[in-house]
Length: 141
Image 1 (cartoon, rainbow, N blue to C red):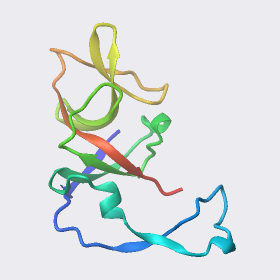
Image 2 (cartoon, helix red, strand yellow; image 1 turned 60 degrees about the horizontal axis):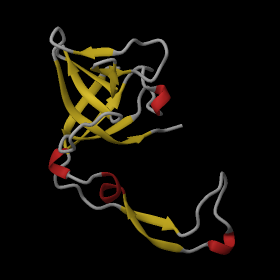
Image 3 (cartoon, rainbow, N blue to C red; image 1 turned 45 degrees about the vertical axis):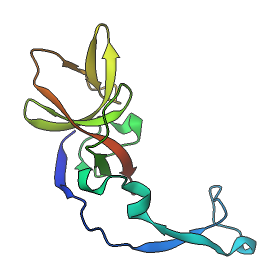
Image 4 (tube, one colour; image 1 turned 135 degrees about the vertical axis):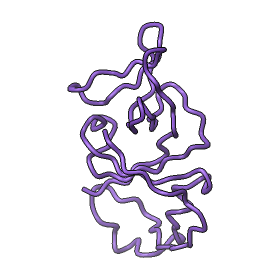
């Protein structure tokens, strides 16, 4: 899955929007609950470590099973230590890719979330560097 790399998030300005107090169950909020609980700032919600956070645009379909689709915006935190089961951005032989860090046999792999893609083994024959952990995905339907 190719990625477009962005710059780190620095000096993000606050753009607060209303957060309704009621939850939406596949519909609109009830008019009876028409009040604002508080303001919501997406920077505060999605970015834990601004100096280590980047936005990348996903390309391809190899991570559809993880809810990452072509064109989605990935919020990637480079300060989080990658662990098994996490979705990571890795550099494999000089190319960016997004995959799930997994165990296979006695080694580690970068696993796609689509049956049409083989896992990428992490071993002495492959140059792999974990670049960051996907902290959030912004998807437009």
